Length: 494
Image (tube, rainbow, N blue to C red; front, top):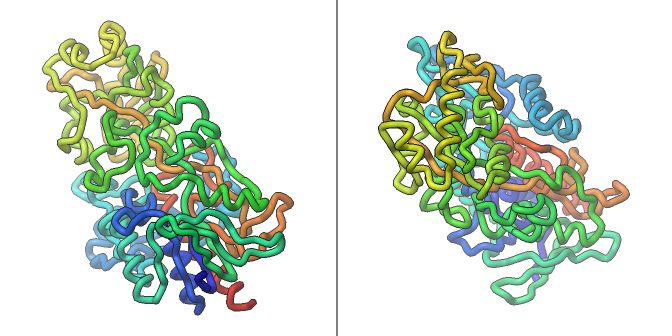
């Protein structure tokens, strides 16, 4: 039996932020991590590291990184005011995001990033993926000009180093099994440490161990038939254990339990995320492509928005296609603006000097329908509108369904390339109902469960149907801090 003030279940971004916040309140903190040390860090280690937060000017960004004044003034950093951030969250969730959670997330997002920096995290501008030179001036787009140096692995390492320095005790290969609960309040967690049953006693518990995206049974149960066939972008350890433990003692489920973040992914990627291939399976340049299914047809408007606002739902559209797969087709005109991972060795790609030759190489695709689709698309492009990948350029199509709203280019310049994709699930949207002020979990009657807090992917009610890129990590920081502060204060008050 171990005795602590606060036990945090999980060791990703949200869990580490909760542990650090509780530690700063003066609490003695333990972290229970199901994975061995080499695989620890949850889904956060598989994240790209971009962060979406509210900011108004370069001065806000200079609070996060050492950007020289001349660079700050000569660059178009885009803008993500609180109002814009609110609007984006409302728009992509079809107005369903919980207003209190949304307000908490948006209003605290910038200060949470400043706090991250104070915890040793290093930020850098997102030059590679979120900017371009337009008329001789660097311009950021997508409203995410900052990312973590080293991406998700860097974020976890920075926070881990600080947690160790502050005395947080981390227990690896320790899977939480159930909550110790007498019907009135929690007093700890039952766990298995390398298979040995162990009790961790504490006055407060923070559950921050992710959703159920690695559990094929739960995916099929909650997301629907076929979802057991999706690839898992991240860790194999997110089996929904934390959700089950909380629901078992009467916690209130909340949010979009049939919803998920799922993207276009390398067709032959490993079953789970592989940190030796950190970006190799990403297929995020699809707005410049035609997405083609095995029937040889398009099935989405590839250019309806920047990938930041569509990538998390378009993976689900790929999963709906025959064989749970699709192809992204490009010609030479846009080759130079494809994301770097399209050039990795671990890609399934075919190349040809004619569309007809390409069609023959696209395994499983109806050749004649594909050629018909390309011909109709080429004829429908509004070529009089200039192409500009750094803005929503309005260069769309007329007379075809589905349309392409922006970045439409006729496929007419060799060599042609097609990339084979499937669906990769990142995390699930269903979670627990909380008090946004302190992160405390509510029961089915919406009463607080004494001693129980949650953060990260386990918070329900923020994301529905879709997701703005970069918001998950920021949500993990904001609600991790809130839960850690709440748990730390409560444990020391008792």
